[in-house]
Amino acid sequence: MGGVEQFIFQLARGGNRNGVESMVLSLSEHADDHVMQMDGHQACRARTSFQLASTPFSVSCFSKFTALAAEADIIHYHFPWPFMDVVHFATGVKKPTVVSYHSDIIRQKNLLRVYRPLQHRFLSSVDRIVATSPNYFATSDVLPEFKHKVSVIPIGLDKSSYPLTTAERLDYWKTQFKGRFYLFVGVLRYYKGLHILIEAAKGNDYPVVIVGAGPIEAELKAQADESGLKNVHFLGLLPDEDKVALLTLCYGVLFPSHLRSEAFGISLLEGAMFGKPMISSEIGTGTSYINIADETGLVVPPSDPAALGQAMQYLWEHPQQAAAMGAKAEERYWHYFTADKMVDSYSRLYQELV
Image: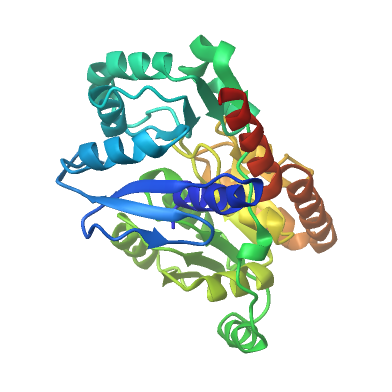
């Protein structure tokens, strides 16, 4: 799952503890009328009809949304998803509404000019908007206009929802990567900065393990091959048991995202949850709320392979300081970023609206 999907899963799963019943509506090319029973909540899918500018659209979603909204006390949207703005107005929603604001629209500048009036009307119409970090709220071009109804609730994770790794899986990965290694986990997208990481890896021989797949996977592999890198390892998609094993074993977590499309950084938070020192870029988003410079890890300028390489070298050559940063990162996770804290905050917000 990507970060937003993981967030929705954690919120719906945890809300059940507070008496909040959640039905998650999403789009899928393989949708049917079956309602899936998930861990503490239900999920329903509408069939994707077509995609435009990376945004899925669905004809059947209008009727499914109308039926589900009629039964709901609160409608909780996730932004940005322009199609849902259309559904919101087309179906005449009369229920209290919450929007989790995950990101400004960064890449589609031309389309944004067309979409901006609808975006403004949608955000003006909802009752509450939730930013995922004070950093993003402070640097967003959009949110200050709506500050009177913006709350900040950081995304949280429930460590107990992650599978326990086995001695067998740990031993297997120890044989694959003997000694220390850096780890990246995530969908391989344009804003993840992995091309910068590959460039940084040219100047050293520290093992770098990349877990995940995505639209630019072939491009990144070609870049690594052309550079003759033997220390960068692409593992593709892995089961959660293996991801947990690698998070347990890794020396540190790398998160080189260089654009504001990376609004929070779930995988970065997973690194903190497993007590690992982190290296991330300063892009004015939640990544620098998770990773505090020189406390839980190192923060470097974006799109700077030399600075990223120097940060990797510093942590590698200072293992005691790296371990102390990892301990601080885990401490910060338990203080600010547990699923319980997130769910309780959203539950209070829901109560205010009903």
